[in-house]
Length: 329
Image (cartoon, rainbow, N blue to C red; front, top):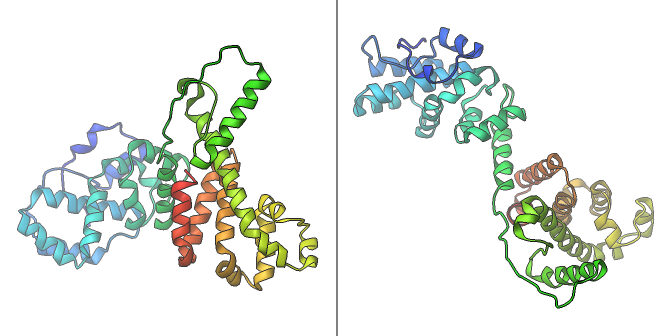
């Protein structure tokens, strides 16, 4: 099925090779040159399906978007009902059809409407990032796109509030005393979840404050995980601890993730048993490593890992959500 409409809307952005190809294949917006029978068009859409490729998905979406403009409301409803598609599917295809940013990206778009639709919810900057990071690609699944969006938006949520306190000293402090004062203030602020950084808010900057905040959260998580693992290590066979070279609960909490998971799987007797008995320990360990690394890519992978845990183990969903919201920003 081809769209028999004159082109006009695509002229608002520079023509690219991929876009010109789309233009030549009748991915057009414009005025109809022939009358449209809603029932016949609905039958054509239903026969074609949502689309088996990005081109076909855009074609279906643009057909619906154009008919929404050109048909009377009751005729458009006839068209939508005639396809037999769920209203949510219609809504997503309409969003795809209205989004002119997708046409130049045609060669890079995923092949299903369910994977393309989340891209329509992105800002221009986010969409560019999805393309540059390889999330927007032909074999991407809807779950992969949705997970990428979620972790990217979590990364920018809940920016820390800056509290300004001013301290004065009658006499200049030596470098050593300044460091001792800062350490004391940081320790005193820890129970309040506040990170203390020397300097004005402008001098410190968001990056430094965020790094310091992660260090504080990492200390809190290490303390909690060590407490959680203390009875586990106390009851573990000495031979198992020796095999994994674990000397204490703190050693296990601060060590590699694979060491922790290896010990817990052996104690539980199976991987599934580990998730049932020690799932929270593993989740907090991932959150701890998130706050210890300076690699943005690693932080992305840690968030993705917890989202995968949430999808497979529903009893851990609330904990994962809490960690992502409060301790993995």
